[in-house]
Structures are given as C-alpha cells and as structure tokens.
Image (cartoon, rainbow, N blue to C red):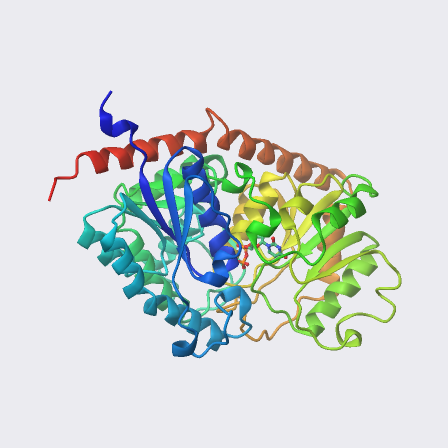
Length: 467
Ligand code: UDP
C-alpha cells in the first residue's frame, strides 16, 4: 500500500457564522474526524462555545471584529441578531476575518478547505495554495437544481403568482414568486460554488432522488455533489454542542413527552432566524388551541406583552409546553410522542424531521424554504402545506400577510386527527426515516460517498506536484 494512503487528511472547515450554518457543517466536520482525519474548524470565540475539541478535531478561533463592524461584544452570529442591518454586519465581519484566516492557512496549509459559499474569497486562497475547495451552502440538491432552473429560464420581470419550475425533473408548482433582489446576491455565490471541487450536501441521495442527481450532473457539466448526510445521525454531538444552551433541559422535555401517547404532540419551531410579529403568534396559538392537540412550541425570546401574542388564559389551560429561546430540537423530534412538526422548512429542520420519520406541516418563509417545502409535500408526500404564499427576502423582513388561524388549524388537523391520508403520510415519513438511517451506516449511500470523497481528496493530495 502507498504510504500516502495511510496518512490522514488535513482538513480546514470554515462555517458561516449562524446556528443554521454552523450546525450542519460542524456535523460534517465530525464525520471526517470520526474516520481518523485531522480536522480544524475555523471560527470566532463566541461561535466556538458550541464546539467540543476531540482527538482529531481542533478549533481555531480568530477575534470577531466587533468594533470595526459596530456590534456589541459577543454578538458574532446571525442567530444572535434580530434585524437585517446587523445581519449584514455579520457578513461584513466575515470579509474582515479573511486576512487572519488566510495568513493562518498560508503558514500551515491543509489538503483541502471546506467552506461555506458565503465566504467566496476562500476560492482565491485555495487557488493560491493549489489545494481543492469544497463548498457547503446548506441547501439540498433539489433546491439548488430548482434555483438553477429559474436562473436559466427566468420568469418574466413583472411576473408574480404561482409558477411551475421550468425544465425540472419533477412537475412542481410553487405558489409564490421569489422576491426581487434575492438572486442578485445569491447567483454570483452559486456560480463561484460551481467552480469548486464539489458541493457538500447534508442530505442523502434517496431523498433528493436519482432524477435530481442526474439532472444536476447534466446541467453542471459533471460537477460533483456529495451527499454525506444526514450528518447529525452519525455524531453524538449533544444539544448544547448544536446551539445555545437549551432553556428547557433535554430531560425536562423528554419526561413531559414520556407522559404522552405516541404521535399525539405537535412540535412547532421556526428555526433560529424567523421573527414572526405578535399577531402571527396569536394566530398560531388560536389555531393549536382550536385543534385540541397538545404541543411543544418554541418561540423567540423577544416578544411583546403576553396578551398581545397569546389568547387570554392560554398558558393556564396547560395543553402544551412553550419554550422561550432554544429547544433541544433533535431530541424532541426523536420522541415517539411527536406526531407532526410545524416547520419553516429550513433545510436542517427538514432533514432532521425526515430522519426521525416525523411528517411535516410546512410553512416556508424565505430563501430555499419554498423549494424544500415542495420536495416534502409535492414530491415525497411526507407533509402537508399550511398555505404560506409570502416569500420574504430574509427572515427579518416585515411580513404583509398573516397565515390565518383557520389555515393553520386545518393543516394541523390533516395530520394530527388521524384518518387515511394522515396514515399514508405518516407511513411514508417513517420509510424515509429508515432510509436516512440506512444511508449513513456502513454500506449506505452517504457512508459510501464519504469513503469515495476521502479517497478522492487523498488522490489529489498525493498527486500534487512538489513546490
Ligand atoms: N434548532 C434547535 N433548537 C431551536 C431552534 C433551532 O436545536 O430552538 C436547530 C435545529 O435543530 C436546526 C437548526 O437549529 O439544526 C436550524 O436550522 P434550519 O436550517 O432549520 O433553520 P435556520 O435557523 O437556518 O433558519
């Protein structure tokens, strides 16, 4: 055997600064470390608090430029800000970090850089160091293909309303039009990502489907997308490792759920960045009360007075748990009492629910979420739609429309009241959960992809000409 084959890879991971970005890329980093490769995650001190070093996994931090961008000390993540202006400052900070990260990498170059696509400058660094770069953008391939279809075959400029995704392997109708301005930011980043050595996808091939994978290879001229996930299924990173400290401990949540019947609890969470106005929270509260089902509902910390977002006496009626702040989501979704997940369709939340076999009630808000919804409802049939049609530019954008309590209640009842349709959806959701678990274990598609990717990176390292 070639001596080079025995030598572990040296890999630098650079996640974007936000829980929804850090969690999956650090899960993927842990996959490589668990195969014996030397992994370094590069981030800032506050974001590093959620990471645990181990034998093969190091964390390298660089001071967040708080003063330069004008953010308070310790606010270093998109999940810690509540408006677009501050979110842009986080983005600005990542450019300011470039010099420090670049110097570090030049002093001690890795075999490959695996970075978020919102750090496009990594491309120049990798070229300079003559090493491959793999890109992660947190999207699933279905969504990347849908975005590419729209880029290649755009809707008429003044068009608004529903549309069928053009030149796409599935017949998918989207009930809203992407907001103007989104693609001018996203398209150049995606174009740069397609020039990388490959994309990292935190999902499994069976969920995106062969049609989609072949379609991507065709439209990209053979660019490789590596399905390596769902990475969280392989790791034993705890809830605390995945984000802020939970306000309610895993133990408290699970012991509450233990007293409930299977599939009887609705779990509601809109990720780390969606900010609903109080009147929308009021509609949700009214709908879940009217449905009569028990629930765990995660609400953000900053809200108005209780009477502005909760019907009178709501909490005293004790039909569920309200978690203010951060919840141990994966543990909750994995509990048999949870019968459905009302979600904003962020990709992490989506793939977590799929992996746990939990059907979804979909309520997309912005970005990739509208495409993710269609994969779940129209293509895979493992969820029902709440009927959200307002596609916002960001999670911070002021909303003009409310999703009514009636639509929410109807969607909740479709899954939670039982009946043939709910049973069919639940059965399919369970099947996809099984497929997800098989994918990441020995012999499964994602497990094999990881082996192939590692071999590929070793080959590139070992044939790199000496300076
Ligand atoms: N999450 C969590 N507890 C919370 C809210 C979110 O553990 O209270 C985790 C969730 O499990 C997922 C991530 O945060 O891994 C959110 O990512 P997603 O892509 O779903 O949404 P985003 O926050 O990026 O909009």
